[in-house]
Length: 121
View 1 (cartoon, rainbow, N blue to C red):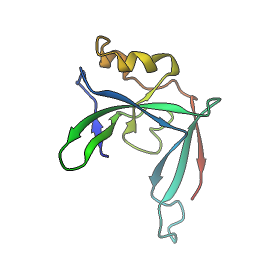
View 2: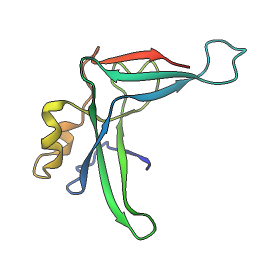
View 3: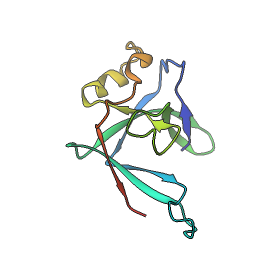
View 4: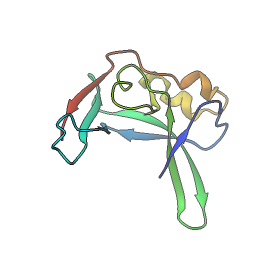
């Protein structure tokens, strides 16, 4: 699995949903004596799961494989990282699987305050 930039692409086929309950981002440690990066857990407020926009393909080497799409960071992610995964609003999950619906119309940042963030390491 690799992350793949979504900007300017339509993804007219092989779209998939990747179900998750959270994801991590890492930043340089606030404590200069600390060797490991700070670890931040992001979850969606008031929803136990969410879906990440993905694409899949068949390869002779590994069989079916998928990748998560990324985009410019939304307001909740921007303080922690310069990219983010494409998190789809619950009402657009079925739309993402329909190639007749423009991918560009579905790939957008979530509104500010949609994600909870907790330092976990």
